[in-house]
Length: 583
Image 1 (cartoon, rainbow, N blue to C red):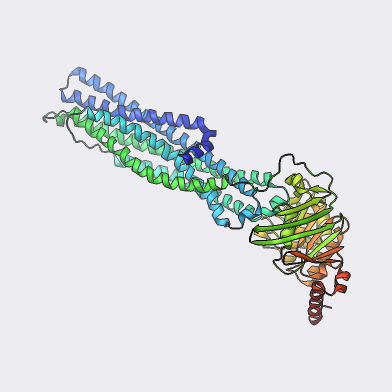
Image 2: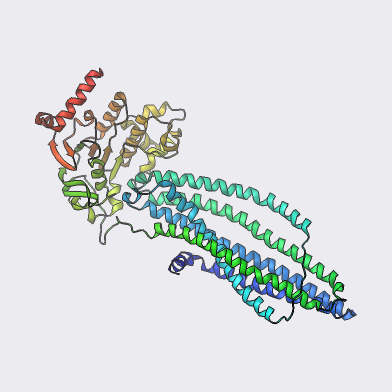
């Protein structure tokens, strides 16, 4: 009951549609209960003997039956379509809401999550809400009311009768062919839209770091919402035709029942049993077993629906661990002065990642982080953007504790360039301009020139309009890195984070990237992680991190003279370069 109550809070937005759908369902049930009475009355007239007045009365009852069956078509359509419309709009809202919630979760939330599973929750599990609100709830109401009504009527009947009403099969087959031809194209469109929606979801979930870093959450939520409701509208078009078809088949079947009773009544004249009671009981008996069977099926469906709903609500109800605290203020006119004051961090109590990190990087300076893989260098930079929160200690930008600043303003002032560069499936220009939606083409080209990628772009088949492919597969690793640097430059953020920007490129490309880095050095605060020490020789300060601690600090020359870990790394790389004939 708690789960059902929680689900009702999500569906309350469409209460008007649900109210009319339920009222239509109740009216449909009353029509279903009234029709057998009219049929039994008609057959009773026939069984008592035909007179001139009898034909008039039978004619009136026939018209009344046709009207009842037409009303059943109307109420079935309203009940079916309105419930589906409310349910599918609810599914659409929940998909957008679930995606938006995932988009705002801290990165630690995704450490034990699979992208495919999250996509399944958004795409497939939310669909179970449609099953619940468009099928299970309306059909449960119908079955309960029908069962109670038929039970009351059957208690008033004293003996059993048998009669089978047959529907004209050819008309049903013809209507089925028409239905298939009409609805199939809409289902194809719906499946296509679902494919586009799933593709966009995977694209965005894979690029979540970039979306959060560049503050494009609302923009991407809008794009996902657009793809999402394109599928919803296509599905509703198909369901509209289905809502017309199914009650039409019932109407045709009912016409068969009328014909059997009207033209077969004389067969009961020689029987000792009342034809009226025979027809009445058989018709009501069929209605009596339907809700019982239906409730059993609905119970199984409800379990499936609630299981999917629980998976969705697990995401919607998950706490957002990194959020603006009350009273947080936006950072204004950031210069880029960064201070770590005895900062420690761990994912859990047993596995510390960073311990007692302290340093000061002045604005406009370049700070480099070096050390073995897995010692917490990337985690340190992610603490600056508040993708994680320190376990202890403080991080300050321009003297302001990050806990006192809004997340949006903080990330607006930081531009990342990651080792595993993510590019969206679009043009080169769109990827460079992603960080600055209002940038002109001239701004994009200037950023590309500063990143030493302009000439490469102009050599591409369509220049800046060249499609990069999913995750930038049509570009080389060096080209992707320089596009990412251009994107960061275009944003004009006072702080730039370079995470292994030259780790996967050749020497020539590394030199081009070094030129790009040199173009921003002195103008912005640069935090660079590097394994290739040649990239950070000119850094104003180099921190050597080992086992989560800063073990050495100084300039390149100072650390080489110190003769410690940095000097050893520098010697190894220099010897390797000499043997390879590079220097």
